[in-house]
Structure formats: C-alpha cells, structure tokens
Image (tube, rainbow over all chains, first blue to last red):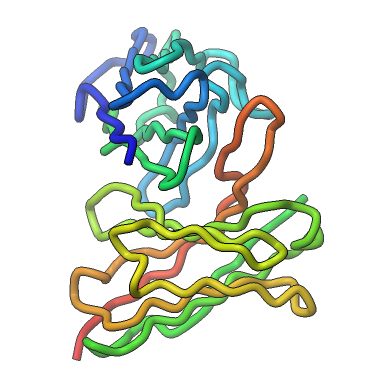
Length: 107
Length: 121
C-alpha cells in the first residue's frame, strides 16, 4: 500500500497569510494526487486533482504542485472560509489512501 | 449534476452487519465507472473502504476486505455497503462518493452528505 504523510498536522494562520501544506507519498505516484477540503460536519470537497488541476468552482487562490513523491497545496491569501481540514489522497493505485489531514486554524 | 444520498440504520449492535445504501440522482450510475465508500471515525481522518464498477467488479481496502461487501443495483440507480462483524471501532460517518475520471487523473467527486453509524448494544 502507498502511505501518504501530510505536514504539518495543524497550523495557525491569519486572514491574508500564504499557507503551504505538504504531502509525501511512500513511493512515486507521478501526478496522481488530489487535495480535499473538509469543514466541520460536512463532507469533503475536491479542490485539486492530478496534483495541479483546479476543480471547477474552486477559487484561484488555491493551487497545487509536485510530482513523484512530494506535493504541495498552497493557499495564496487565506480567507475566513478557508479555515478547515485539508486531506491529500493518491489516485495512483488501490487502496486509495488519504493523508492524515492538516487542520488550518485561526491565529 | 450528480448527487448522492446515503441511507440506512444509524445504530448497529456489536457483531452485527452494517448496511448502507447510496442513491444516485441527476445521472445514471452506468455513466460513471467507479462508485466508492469512505468512512471517518469521530474526530479522525478519512479511510477508504472500497469501490464498485458499474458492471459489478469491486476493490476493497485490505484492512477491511474480509468483512466488506459492495453491490450495485442499476435498476434502482444505487449501490450498497455491507460491513459484517462490526465492533465499536466501526463507529463512523460513512460517505458514498463517485470516483470520477478527469482524464488526467481520478478523484472523489461528488460526495454524499454522510451517514453516522454507531455500533453499540
């Protein structure tokens, strides 16, 4: 199984900050990496697929990069509605593993 | 657009079988390839349970494989999950989701709203 490791597990940031979350795969997954946002009591929402493609309707302040084993989700200017937990997920092979999540909290 | 809705008992006794159904609306279940189940224990992260192809082929998480059965009913445009021999550790919010082919990659989109299943006597 391909293991996904996110860092940090949590972070505190202010509105307007640039935020970066990293995800590392235990083996190369090419660009088969997705990012999801989950708010309390809600289902996850797909933000980015194939490492860097923005899902329809997702604000352009979200961006993704990386390939192979190391990936990054960047929020260029954090907005109040962005405080949530973010998960990476590999779509290279089965089982479809998720990272443990990164909680973005208000500073 | 495609929408998903989970349904099923919210309380299951230990050693029993958890059963959930995901109704697909806004499109045919045969129009997409893979349909999945993901769960989230209270306060914890996401765990992929398994998936079913619209033709009936399945994949499961090896950690749950012996207890998981996923089926599809194309006539009702829905798919189902059965998890046997449940314990308190199976208490979670269970989500159904479409595993969508974006051509350059695959992703879970959309998701159902989730169904909380508690395992308790």
